[in-house]
Image 1 (spheres, helix red, strand yellow):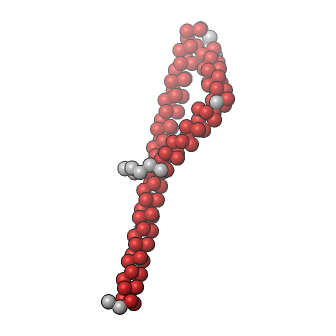
Image 2 (image 1 turned 60 degrees about the vertical axis):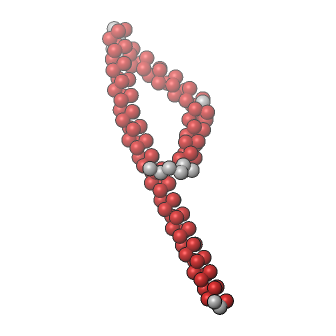
Image 3 (image 1 turned 90 degrees about the vertical axis):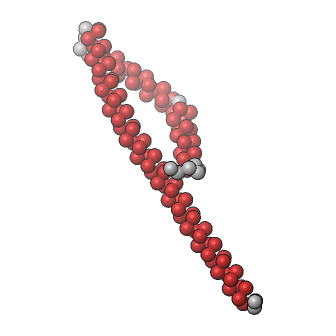
Length: 116
């Protein structure tokens, strides 16, 4: 074989390798994007349902407390105080309890190898 023929074969092989590698990178990026996107959508859906359940449970607890205390507004006031305390705890410890675990979850999802 001549030198030119060997260079052509090598060049074709390198070009094919680069195209295959680029296609693989696109497919991996697409798979990661789809996995993260579907996780976000399912999280939003489950979160919405959880908020609705929490709303009705809180409303029922407030009504129950109002009946037990024999005051129409006390149950709702007690539930407001409970949620205010919860909000205060979350605001004070939001970095440790919310931001860091959420950041770690996102990083884990981005670098996860199993997509399906």
